[in-house]
Image 1 (cartoon, rainbow, N blue to C red):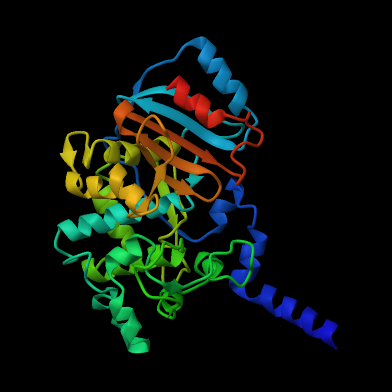
Image 2 (cartoon, rainbow, N blue to C red; image 1 turned 60 degrees about the horizontal axis):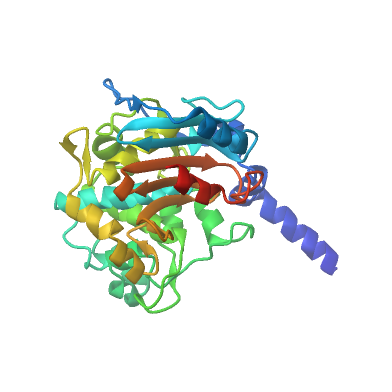
Length: 360
C-alpha cells in the first residue's frame, strides 16, 4: 500500500505543471529557451558599441586554452570601454541569448532605484504592505518588513531556496503559473532585519512593488528605463509565468547577449551614467556597491555581492550556473562570464580567477 502511495505521489507531482517543467528543463540547455513563454525587447536603433582593444598573444592563448571546451558560454574583458578579450564557446555567437539566472536580481534592484528616484516609491523604509496590502490582510507582521529589508535579503520571509527539491518554493516561482498568486501567499519565518538569508522570493516581491508603484508591467518599465537607455545591440527576452498573466519572473530568467550584459556593467561602473546620459543617480550606485557598506552587510547589499579580493574592491552580479558581471572600479574593469555549470573550475584550470586578476 505504501508503495502505491509513493507512486501516486510521484505521478501527481509530475502531472502538476511546474514540477514536470522543472524536471524536463533541469539541464536548462540553450535550445530549450524558445520553449518558455517570454516577452521580448527590441534592440536600440542606435546600439552602443564597445571599442576594440587587445592583449598579448601569449595571454590570449593562455585564456583560450582555459576556456575552450569549458563550462563558459561566453567570456569578455572590458577596460576603459575597450574589449580586451572576447570568447565564445562552440555553437555560441555574440548574438546568442544567454540565461541570466540571478544576475537578474541586480537589474531589478537598479530598476527599483529608478522608481524611487522618480518618486513612484516614497522611501526604502516604507513597509512593503504599502504596495502589497494583501500581505498585511493575511498576517499583520508583514507591515514590519520594509523595502530595504527585502533588497538586502533580510526580510524574514519563509521560502525554500532548494534548487533540487521539486516541491521547493523557488521552483514554484521559477516554473509555476500565476506567480502573483504564489507570491502573495508567502509566510513569515522570523523577524525582519536580523540576518541575511538568500531567498529569490524577495526579488520577486521587488518586482511586484515596481509594478504596483509605477502602474506598469515590469517588462514595459524595464524596457523604457534600462533596455533602451543602455542601447542594447540585440533582441533580448525575459521569461514570464504564463500566457494569461505574463508576469516576469523577476528573480531570474532574462536572456541577453553577452556584451549587452556588459553594458549594464558599464552603467554601474560609470556610477549611473551611460554614454553621457544619466540613468540612475550616483548616490544609488554608491549605496549599493560601497566597499564598507558591503562588508557591513556580510558581503551583500541591494542585490549585489562583494568580491573577496585582497588587492582591489570588486563587486558583482551572480547567477546560479556561474553567470557573473564582475566590476572592479579601481581598474575601470568589467568582466562578464556566463556559464552553464555550477562548478566554476570544471574543466577550467585551478586558479583561473586569480590568474585573471594578475592578467588584468
